[in-house]
Length: 156
Image (cartoon, rainbow, N blue to C red; front, side):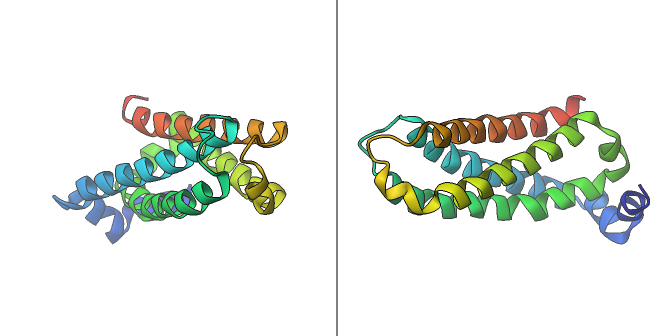
């Protein structure tokens, strides 16, 4: 909690709270990042789960994964700005803590998926193995839940 308080009370936290454009811009960039992340990974996850079978899995992954990574890259600094603006309150929020836990789970799932299956995608145009399909559906659920919790922070 000392780090949280230090961030909240820092010049950066004061800027994030006091600037007329910092928080709204960070919120907009965070939302754009969410759209990129969940949109790209969501489509890939749906393909791996069996939808859109006319689309080649490996090509779709090559096209969509960089978009998802770009979304994540947008979300990290914009999320830090929004967190700094109200760090003390957010650190105590159960909704925010769940969001962080699910982000960690989503990142672990993505890394595990790439390690286990990354080189085999080109052979999955007919169907992905059942375990890969479960991981893809889990990914979809996790990232949608992260986005939902992010929107619910203001109400929790």
